[in-house]
Length: 224
Image (cartoon, rainbow, N blue to C red; front, side, top):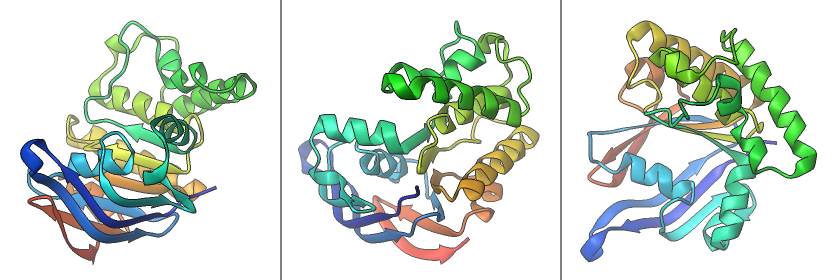
């Protein structure tokens, strides 16, 4: 399954009613790779968190046929766990756990019947991403290796959507290019929708479309 995104009159307000993000209309067809770029502090991460249901917002967020913005907090959390994989700039791994244990974290929160499959997929993705020692603690991993563990974790539950926040920002060029290749391939092969925030022109060049965020507003969409 894959999911498209439709935003209508989306607005995220900060303290004092200050508008942090505003998107009157954005449509992302299923299976699209969308890049989001803009200056630091422009509202990119806030936008990503809004469409993931992590921060409160006004307006309409639809993932496929689901009116995501109308769901309860509990239902949004369940929808996110079932349909979204997230890749963070600072990895958010548990250093005292192995790569495999980090990658299969979703199994801890999944229904019992799905846990074994998530665990198997986590190990498979680690192998596909070139991580051949999955029982090693991630504290000893390089930045590029840690980001690939984070990518395996995002993919382990076989999500329809991958949301990535500056996935190459902490990496050197070689490691960044490897992560870009792996991330794009994982989404293309399964028809996943990918929404990735980045300043990295190598990553943006691999997207189908790019949206620029300026002072919280979405500028014209252009081909990547």
